[in-house]
Length: 290
Image 1 (cartoon, rainbow, N blue to C red):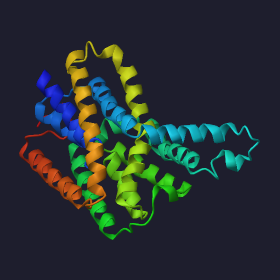
Image 2: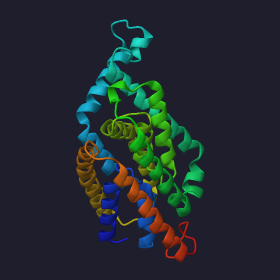
Image 3: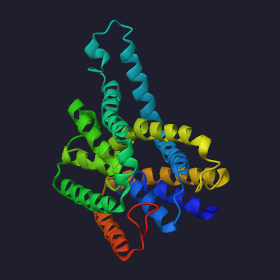
């Protein structure tokens, strides 16, 4: 991978990480079209760029949630356990809800790691998931109510959001697509479903990105597809800038328009990939014959 291709991957990561179109599917497809897998180290590092954009954009929300969560947890005023769990503090409760919503993807990621890294990387599975969750997003967005806000979130809702996020371990589902689809099915407004998706991504995606980066650092020098630190850092910065702009634009778009356009795009890209697979231009699995 040359410098231009590394930057291109950074742009793709920044554009697709927060949209309900599956960034993992796009990175997987782009890598296949370029004829070279950039490797786990490169992918994990540039992912930290987009997650840093989330931290910057939601810094005030994050600081407020963390401060209230810690204050309730410490219970300096002799609070009952229920109050320590944020019963009378919505920001503290939100902190617990984010933790609950993170558990499913962490547990599934540990239990099914080998399957996720091998079998589920098949592009035919990606095609199916792009279509299925595109249709689900389209349906629930059109039929779902626009009543619930993040302030009305419950423990049950948090667990269901977590299931939606967990399904994103399958390329083509989309982490934001899964959580937003579940949010719209639960009756959350389009903007609040997106905000919950962003906040719930922080511990799950940022934690996974740091872990994969640490695990891969010892191998980056010898990794066959690693483009070098210069190109990787440049791609990470690009993904950060593009990701930050996408967050701003996305929240404005969904406050006015529906998710129909994203659903249509998912189905269209799935059809294109299916045609490339049928014609042999793409191989279902990396390293397999086209």
